[in-house]
Image (cartoon, rainbow, N blue to C red; front, side):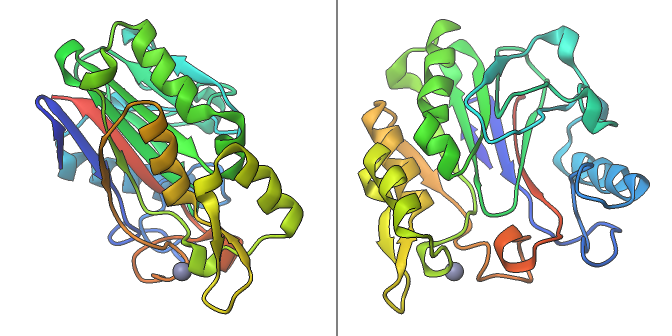
Length: 246
Ligand SMILES: [Zn+2]
């Protein structure tokens, strides 16, 4: 979908692709135990559909941390064919380079994609409960501002993530995340303590002055035909959020 003028953003599903169970069928992650050739075929077919170059797409290691890396032309293709070559230690990527797709993987955590179109800046962030506590989204926005973005120009899209319906957590975990982002406070439908990642992410973005936010996809755990869910399935694939300047 067009995220802003000159910027495209896409959230993939598990549909299509060639991976077998338990990664069926469009798993885009090289680090989850799937056959590498199948993942590379899935990445190639996804890129072809999107009209981007798989060999230029940049991926990050994703360690549930708070590092957001600024990537340049020299980073084109990092992580495209090997997880070992992905941007190390990062859970978010920012660039102002045209035609340099940024990708993050998720299966319950949310992929969050950003654009600041006037300066041609885009960002992709992997945001779960650790990322919310560690402020990875605030750091991503700050990195965009450092590159010259105007705060009022930033728009974002929040991809599919596990819903409060399926994300029961212990009271200690909830307390830590709620303290950082009160909007994550939630209950499951049967009344257990839960987290609402999507609401938390939107609250953080609003707090950061990012008000143009689109939410896509709904609960990953609730839609086994559409999305991979780590909490539901354990060993499973990953969908992706991909953003690029056209
Ligand atoms: Zn659910």
